Amino acid sequence: MVLDKVLSFFSVDMGIDLGTCNTLVCVRGEGIVLNEPSVVAVKRGTNKVLNNGNAVGWAAKEMLGKTPGSISAIRPLKDGVISDFEITEAMLSYFIRKVNGRSRFVGPRVVIAVPSGITAVEKRAVLDSAERAGARRVYLVEEPMAAGIGAGLPIVEPTASMVVDIGGGTTEVAITSLADIATCESIRVAGDDMDEAIISHMKKAYNLTIGEQTAERIKIEAGSAAPVEETSSLEVRGRDMISGLPRKTVISSDEIREALQEPIGSIVEAVTRTLERAEPELAADLVDNGICLVGGGALLRGIDVVFSNATGLDVRIADDPMTCVARGTSIYLENLEDWKATLESEMDEF
Image (cartoon, rainbow, N blue to C red; front, side, top):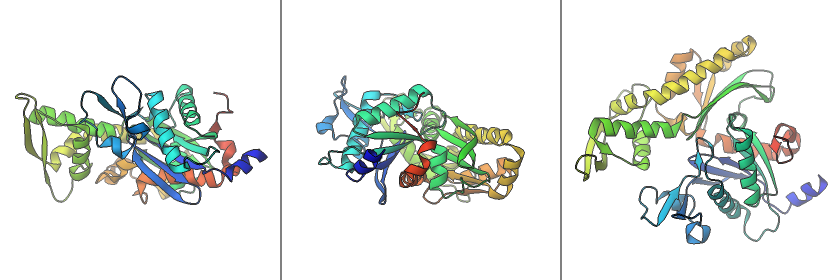
């Protein structure tokens, strides 16, 4: 224990929001120092990362959907969990090395946020990947707890706080009180499913095939969960499914809203189910405290209106919702000795 404290003076301890779409890294006392896509480019048929292990993050995302036959651009996390162990290890190693510095001989202590619904085997995969990537000690914290702390909710108080974290691969819905989760639900429906819904709509309505990055752009620029005052249109380019030739078309924001109804409906159902399981006293607190939205999905226009209409509660979007989980891991780092008992690590039995 004493040695661990001494070693911490020679390492850069960090908190990591290991997301399906983006990975954010924060350093104690410095805040968020890295925010890059969770993408790795490798030589096809191998797990060898290109450019001497540096084709990670932004450099790799630019290759998504545009790689020649000899290269694969891979997202090693799917639905919030590791789908490719070796590639995740290479990605974490790159990020840790980039933040910690090659010249340091002592690996960092790392707090990693993970979905609340992952299995013991999936937790072990995260722990092992981080350790093999160079971490000295790894702690796991559930994303709703990190998100709540990062959003400034009073989660340590004897009052209910509700957080809905809409990420890329998972949506975390949780009611917290007294520094723990009272009830929660983790569903594997989130931002990626919204992109897939847009891709499916373009195929059905226009016989046009588009890529993931184009779908994400459409969602950001024209997507909405509730009707907006001004209907906008957007030019979309892709490949014609009949002729096989490049083609462009124009779509309206109303179409995109309709296409997004299914994944948004699944998230709304998860929120209402969680509220139905809440203890009466906690439910009573939420009448005053409302719901806090975090994650990239919280930026979808009108999504707070949809949740408010479905639950009858006040709904607010956190300040800078995409960084709440990362900021929460930073707060855990700053109070590691006090919070250590609430975190899982490689020392725990699974």
